[in-house]
Image (cartoon, rainbow, N blue to C red; front, side, top):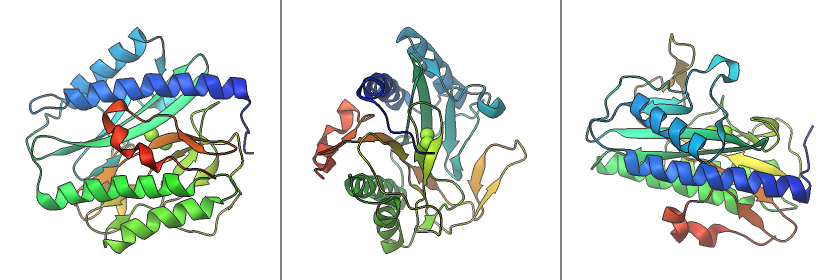
Length: 261
Ligand code: MG
Ligand code: MG
């Protein structure tokens, strides 16, 4: 069931997203050689608490972190721990916040120092796939329009598309309907309506599509061990435009992607 949010609910979700954007900005700035993924998780817990929210991932289906921290070949759901970031790594930081009962979800892949040109390009293209998805996510379009826009960018560059995991409705719970795949599948293809809140999140591999789950039963890695990137925003579909609720000040150069229906 797709939940159409009231104006009051949208206001609450907007606040949750603003808090999350600020936390992610702090985390982005904290990524440096020598820090552990657990160190980033500790910063997230502290920041979220200080801002009056709670980490929504912590304890969700038993997940032990406030963040998913996925390094290099790790795609998503990496568990924060003692892995030390090295120059040339990339780390995907996925964070969810619940604030006053309202849920937000956003992710960013951050280079640790200078990364190889091919990895740099992977990050750029994955971000571009997210922005194209956002542009297609306007009232009156359907889920497949968003999926197609994302998939087109990824496939144009010959990258692998992660299919078993996808974007989703969000706002009143951590995951809601509808699913937003990063390719055009045969699943439900509802029309986007004013008041829907969705998380759009391309996961893109430098190599092939295939992924595996590690023995920790959480960490998703690329089957061919190539680097993977993940960018995510929570957005609200409104009557006359789509609002990117988790946009960070540091990426204001992308704000032209906000669209009119
Ligand atoms: Mg997320
Ligand atoms: Mg998500």
